[in-house]
Amino acid sequence: MNPPKEKTAEVKETVSTTTENLPKSHFTDTDLQMEWNLLLKQLQSKNTFVFNAIKAFKLIKKDENAIQVLYPSDSAKIEFDKISGEFFNHFKTKVHNYSIEIEYKRDFENLKIEVVTKKKIFEKFIEKNPLLKDLDDLMKFDLT
Picture 1 (tube, rainbow, N blue to C red):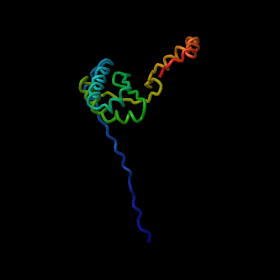
Picture 2 (cartoon, one colour):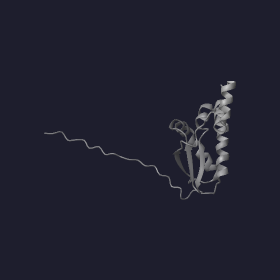
Picture 3 (tube, rainbow, N blue to C red):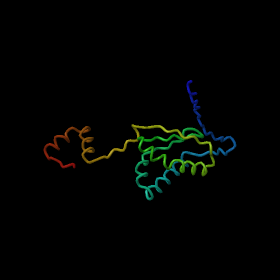
Picture 4 (cartoon, rainbow, N blue to C red):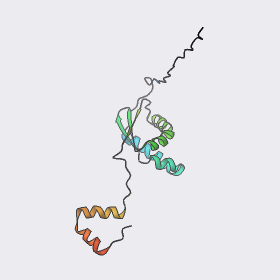
């Protein structure tokens, strides 16, 4: 006799919240930016590691009940996830709109933070005026 095979059922749990009866007040992009800047100021003094990770994020109001979060890297998003729940709950309460949906999008181009050195500035000037290259060769500028 063969032993009976155990049958396991895979259970998927979905959590859904109904927002039909909750307030859906209007909010502006200015409201969103003010709260975001306030959070950044608080984080700058309380938790500089998280502040440095998320300071390049951009929050944009897309629709009446949608916010798009543009983030530069996955590691920065992990740090943002630690505080995002608290931030968005506070924001929803403040603007009395509990049906706001958050959309995350990775943005490579617009969110790069470039350190501009004197050498890079000079190289941009050389592109506009090639005679500066001759001057640099002659004078041996120290742009470090």
